[in-house]
Image 1 (tube, rainbow, N blue to C red):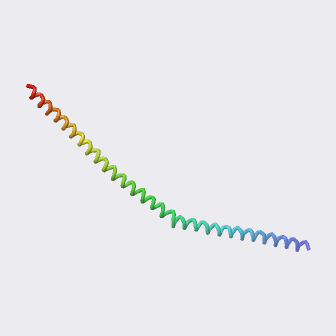
Image 2 (cartoon, one colour):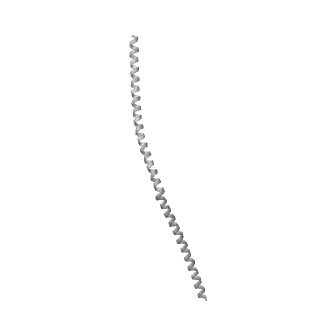
Length: 105
């Protein structure tokens, strides 16, 4: 009789432990499915978006570099024009001095 009770108790404990392992296995299976979904989302959505952002960044950087070069060329042209204007202004002043000076005599 006592042995039957011990056997029944052990059988019940074994069944409980087995159920817990089954529950854990089910939870791990669900976790594995979720991890696979996340991996698929990373591969299918996030990586392509990241690549598109990188491509846009690269294109913007290239365009900024081109515009910077053009701006540098414009600066050189403006400086050259400024020098020519100053030379012309000096020439005009010299011509005025000669013209005014020759009329006074």
